[in-house]
Every structure is written in C-alpha cells, then in structure tokens.
Amino acid sequence: MTLEERKRLLCESWKQFKQNLKLLKTSIERIKNLDKLDEIQRGEAIEAFLSRYSRTVDLLINKVLRGLDILEMEDTSKKLDIVIRAEKRGFIKDFNVLIEMKDLRNELAHEYVQKRIEEALQYSLEIFIIAEKIENYLKENRYC
View 1 (cartoon, helix red, strand yellow):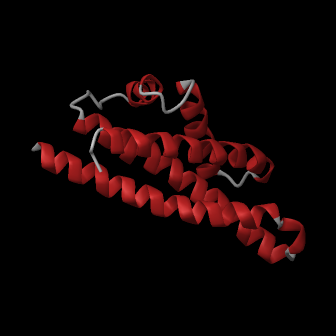
View 2: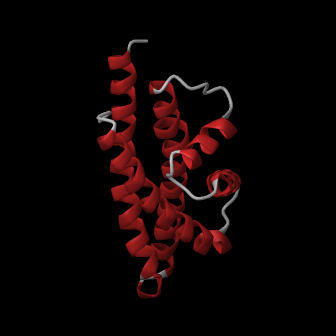
C-alpha cells in the first residue's frame, strides 16, 4: 500500500468517525432530557445512544487509531499496542481508558445494560476530547 493510499484510508476513517460523533452528540442531548420523554421515546433514545457510543468506540480504535498506525507503518496486529500508541501520541492520558471504553462497548453489544448509561456518557465526553487531539495531530502532520 502506498503512502497516498494509507493517507486516503485514514482520512476516510476520520471522516466517518466525525460523522458518527455528530450523531453521538445528538443522542447525548436526548439522553440529558430523558425525563421529558415518554417510556417508548426513552427506550429509543437510550438504545440509539448506546448504539452510537458503541459504533464511535469501534471507529475510534479499529479505524482511526489503527489507520494512523498503518499510515505511520506501525505494527497493527495487537489492539493493545494501538491503544498504547494513542497514549504515547498524547491523545489520552491513560491507554487503559480506551480499553475500558472497548470493554463497555463489548458488554453493551451482548446485553442491554441501562444502568451503564452514565458510564457510557462519561466515556462519550472523553471521546470528544480525544477527537480534538487527534484532529490537531492530523493537521500538524498534514495527514488529513
């Protein structure tokens, strides 16, 4: 794969991730106003939020961070190395937070866990901070 192909792959993943962030933001706003919704609307809002959270975490780790590693010719065979490099690049203070995000995502994928909404909400807010740092990194390095 050429350098230009690796850049294109990363930039496509970044664009997809940013679009998903917009949807996640919309879901977060709905979650903050659950008390104003009826039971069916509450259920739909929660389901949409948890689904968008899960998708955002997947895109972040499996597409954006992995795509960045591919571009920079790092070994991408181990996800642990991918998240460790995210910490080394300054995107997050502790790579374990990304692992916790992914673990919550996996848990949500296998069962509906309404009591974990607050945790997913806190991680979602962290994702927006990470996204800003990644965007700065991409611009500084003229990747996207």
